[in-house]
Length: 355
Image (cartoon, rainbow, N blue to C red):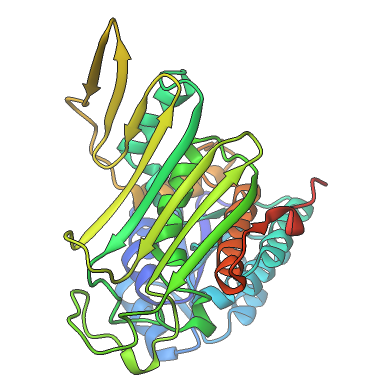
């Protein structure tokens, strides 16, 4: 590996041009040397904006012809697994956008390939890199909340269906708010809880608002071809006895336009993450604790820069691991399956191997 990490980007859409490319550009230890996108004009525009020397319309050609150290996968969800596997096999470390994949089997293959090739694989789950989560994680790890046995995950928009991209296309994305915004809060809760192994998932999904014309706070969406859920709700139980209640929606008749939060409940205290507040009972009184100061941080930037450092051998335990990616995918798949079948799903049916 040279002085700088040589990076290739697969996919030149919004997440690439708004998050990955600018943050690589701001990192002195990395340089983007190539970008690949099936839409050549989109790749060319990104290359011009970020001074990327070479453009490809096939990421396989990029992997074959470029001497890359690392790759960012910024494609629609359907292509996360094949692009990641190809990059790992080409000897690259991989930062893949969320969710990890479309199925648990794909996530497992990604994990196993990363192990076999000895390459780093992580995912763009940036909320765990925020000051609120980093601070609360220290409190949890030091036992301030005691054993955390329950959590509530909330990622709900009033009318926040994306009016761009392929977010409402089930074939390309696999689902709607659960795997777009819900996955962020779910990962945050699991990260704070130590990523316990799930046992049972019960879920329901609704498509009540997205497939009809209405007010769009995130632009006008293609309601006539809307094929994902606009709300997902579920309950997850874990081997250690803990549980999570989850609610995620692109569109729901609620007061707030956009609310993203995680609540933890432990034996010695509880917490809300956004904004950060702690709730405890001490010396015969119920108290609320609010930080007077939290350092400003750019969570998206932290993901990219810590990925670069990890590729260079500097441990970054806050990054999502392939094993955690499998657990996350298990829960997502089980919730959708439960919603389809109308019954709780035992996660042991596709529990990851421990090899």
